[in-house]
Amino acid sequence: MNTTHRMAMNAVLGLVFVTGLGLTAYLIADSWGGLYWLFDCVVGVVAGLLALLRGPQGTWPVAGGLAAAAVAVVVARVADLPQEPGPVTALALAVLVGSGIRTLPGLRAAAVAAGGFTVVVGTWLTALPDAAGLTVVTVVNTVTWLVAVVLGITLRATGRAS
Image (cartoon, rainbow, N blue to C red; front, top):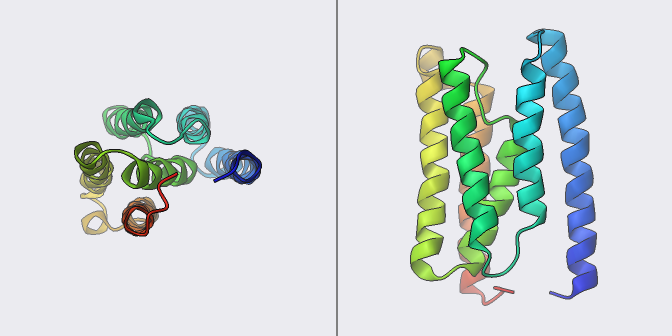
């Protein structure tokens, strides 16, 4: 992929992240109140920036995004906050997981898929008291992870690893 194409994709992705963070902050502040929106936005900004820094053979942005999402799940559970990761973090994580599966060597790519699945399982576990875990957050996180895995594997198999 040429540099101009990558920059254009990242510009659009960045715009989606900023718009999503603003909308999510507004909706959370309106419904949940307090400063919880700030926590969700900080996690979203970290994951979004790491998604924008991804690149071929780049393990650290993927690992950082997975770690940020996992920490958000644990903090939300311990602090009795709404479920995490939020929608922007889920999207950023999907970009990172798909990119990691597409570009990283075999074992690291498998570890990325497993790490993303671990975050999804954590999200489901934090929702179990409510409707057997089925919430918008669990569905969004599950679907984005699944799409990322399928696209990452497909692009890897077709040789589009750069």
